Image (tube, rainbow, N blue to C red; front, side, top):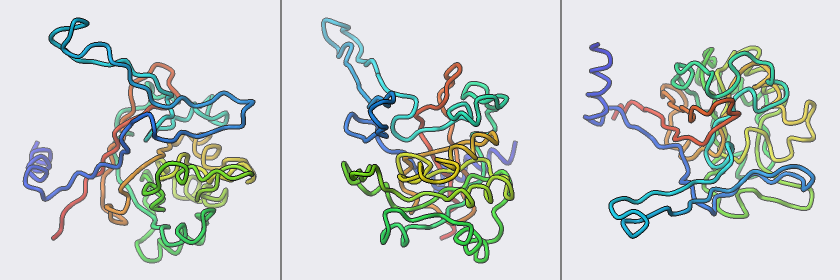
Length: 259
């Protein structure tokens, strides 16, 4: 068990930093808005049951109401029509070792600062690989845009033709899934797809290609600017919801401090 002992000692000594990649759940955190003819994602709500008072003199607790896909959250394959028949496709069926693994971060923050509709393309990916090496199989790939620094209306960035936010092209997702065999894809935006992702073929290619291949999604991530391009380890265990298509979660990354 020396590996685990060394790992725990590294965290205790500060040689391994644990970075929180999660937004705080509160009623004001934005959720995705769909056209009105569709069902809508519920915002987070917290109702006090008791607070050391006549309703419960020695305890405080709350009832929570929210969607599986509220706040920083996990997408299982069963979330999308392309993944509805994938074996072990709901959150309670996914092997637990899938929730811990290596992560690479592709920094798209400069492009996203100039263009709200910035695209992650195969050319961006191969340019990143020329500097950092090929993306290893079974890794999480996170698209850093610094979008998580936005607040309120600027986060969803809605206009007359819908939301505008950065995301991957279909060709980029095919490269990551079919040629690099990644474990999953994560973003700082409200979804793994671009705000205008409905206009691609297929529509919403991150969802369609990822989940059709049995891969996973993470969205509404934060603090990606604190991660190195390679070398970190991601922990992203969702709640074990029977037949769940997703779950809010606390996402953490472990980073070796080489200073």
